[in-house]
Image 1 (cartoon, helix red, strand yellow):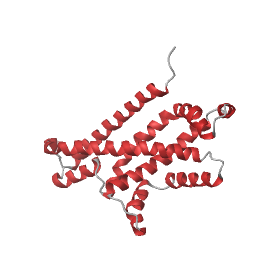
Image 2 (cartoon, helix red, strand yellow):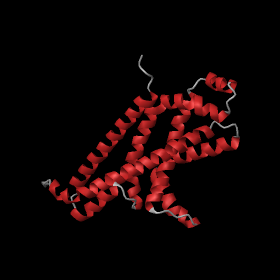
Image 3 (tube, rainbow, N blue to C red):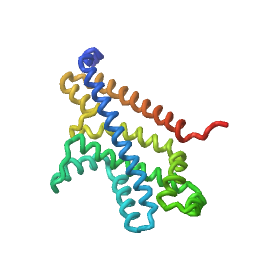
Image 4 (cartoon, rainbow, N blue to C red):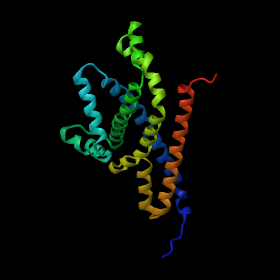
Length: 222
């Protein structure tokens, strides 16, 4: 059996592919920013002197890290409405991605905080700074400098994970590719193009994060 490649059949749909890329980038950016905020707060909560705060933060991280992302998406979109909490597909996708990214980022950030010398904490306390001020002004930036490459990899993974939210009909590149497939039945060509687009976006994100690393976290060359 021979298969004749015909990418020209996809040309009328190039705007839909670009729209899918835009929605994927937008979804990823929102999830990354929200996930980073959640990750920082969770990492700080795991350092809290209050046992119940540490327990809540640890429970959240372990629950997210040890369950499939698809199940998390289904729980938010299909499960929560049974107790009266409903989300539109895109809102459910943003929430699921943010919580997932936040849990994985929290562990990376916690590792960076643990790598900071205890002398830094003691120096901040000696200056009369409160605990949160010590983290904000003394600990957080050096910690982020240590773990930013690993954190960047986690953010690129968040971009690629967006494809899973197509399972709840949240619009992004994969869901749009599936819609085009039902119209053209050119699955091979469609998913080759989709793969290339994801590769381009992932490499683009990686280069952006490298630029951020050089601009904000690299030591100046003397």
